[in-house]
Length: 226
Image 1 (spheres, rainbow, N blue to C red):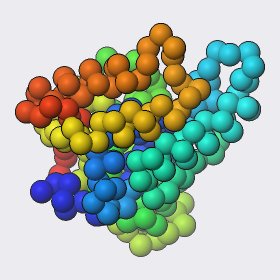
Image 2 (cartoon, rainbow, N blue to C red):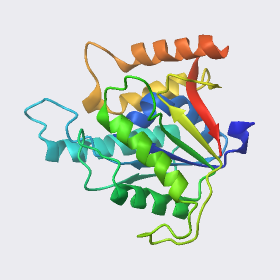
Image 3 (cartoon, rainbow, N blue to C red):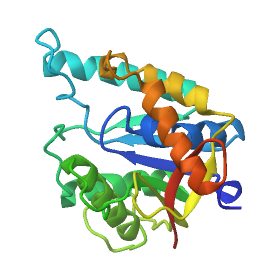
Image 4 (cartoon, rainbow, N blue to C red):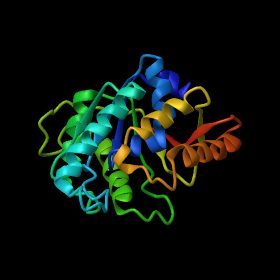
C-alpha cells in the first residue's frame, strides 16, 4: 500500500549515481506504474575520479550527462542539479535546507527518498549530511513561517523512505526491475571500476535484501510515516 499511495516522489541524493545504486529498482517500478519521480542531486560528484585526464571541471559535465542518461533509463521525470556544493565537503547548512524546501513546496511530493542519516558507522560525510538536510527540509517545508523561502505555501510530506539503512523495516520486490537498475547504474561510465562491475555487487545487495524481505531480489528501506 505504501508504494501504491505514492504518486509524486522526490529523491534527495548526495551524488550522481546514488539514486541508481540504492533505489534504482524501486524507482523503475514506480515509474512503470506512472508515478512522477524527481531527483535532487546536491553535489556534482566533482571528486569522483582520480584520473589525471578527468579534472573536476570536466568530470562535472560528464557526470551530469551520465545522471541524465541513467534517470532516463529508470523513467525519472526530471533531474535537478543544485549548485555550489562540493563533493566530499557537503554540510547540512541552512542555505541548503532552504533550497530543498523550495523544491519540496514546488514539486509537492507525498514521498521522499533520502539517505538514512542515523546509519551506524556511515563513513561518507556527504551521505550523512544529505540525509540530515533532507530530514530537516521535510520538517521545515511544513512551516509557513520558515524564513528565506521563495515559495511560502507549506507542504506536508506523508512519508520518508530512508535508503542505505542498517535498520530496514520495508522491502521492495525489484525482481522484475533488477536488470533495468543495473543498466541505469552502468550509464555512470566514469564510475565503473573494471575490477568490480556494478552487476556483481548490485545483484549481491539485492539478493541479501531479498532474503530478509522474502523476495528473490529486493531493495531495503526504513519507512517513516509522518
